[in-house]
Length: 305
Ligand SMILES: [Zn+2]
Ligand SMILES: [Zn+2]
Image 1 (cartoon, rainbow, N blue to C red):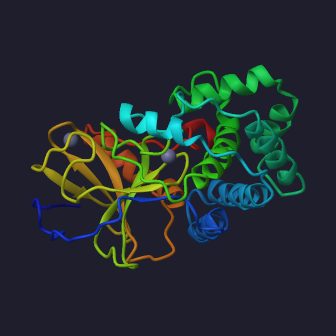
Image 2: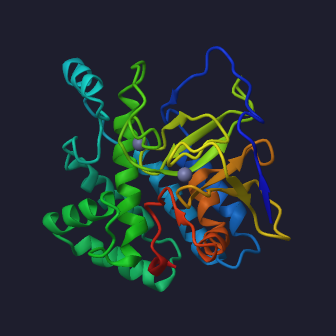
Image 3: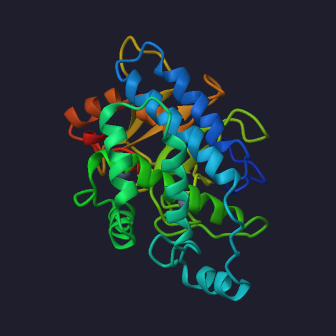
């Protein structure tokens, strides 16, 4: 199923559009866990989605008790703004070893939950890993290079990195951050988006925001423009026939990439991370059309299923 949208069709110019929303919701991961549980019902990948829900629940517990992180200094933030770098860039910013404590606590909180066997084995293996190995896994995931990371460990290592980067992003409250070049990367941490949402409340109805795959920040990008190459022609929307839902894929005939877009009006409780993993059928469809994914889901590796 596909429809074609013309530039400017859905978004009229308006005055004060907030550019960036930091991940300030206290219940960010708890609400993601709820969404995973909801999506797992009668789903072909129900077991995997339930596991991801348990993991999101644990992420909430860990971030609730996460030690306060020092904010980057004002002079460093100014330097980044001048140079066009994201202040918490996955490689520009030296991640603190606290992220590994978060991973340890994450693994501890998974104990006692009824996990599928491969996930239980992955947790036990990660508990035995040394610091260097965990840092190597983290560097691999943050570079979108999954080759050296055991597939079953991907959701957990990525989950711990999400906790650390979300906690760090929260230290930037009140800061103005510029749009990056390219504009489809997170202005906070430079990661690609997991998906986009079209908002339905808070004065931003109908506006598109890209959602960071790592720190869960959201940044504005006008609709009906390819988020990857800025093309405004040849944008096509794909969904799965017979599977109504808030998620479709916005694909571009210029650069042949696509990004999922989630209409919150149709499903206010939708979560970019959860709804992306519940719609892998859309990725298969787009791959068959010869398109490549424009964003990333850090917690997913086909071998993690
Ligand atoms: Zn980010
Ligand atoms: Zn494009």
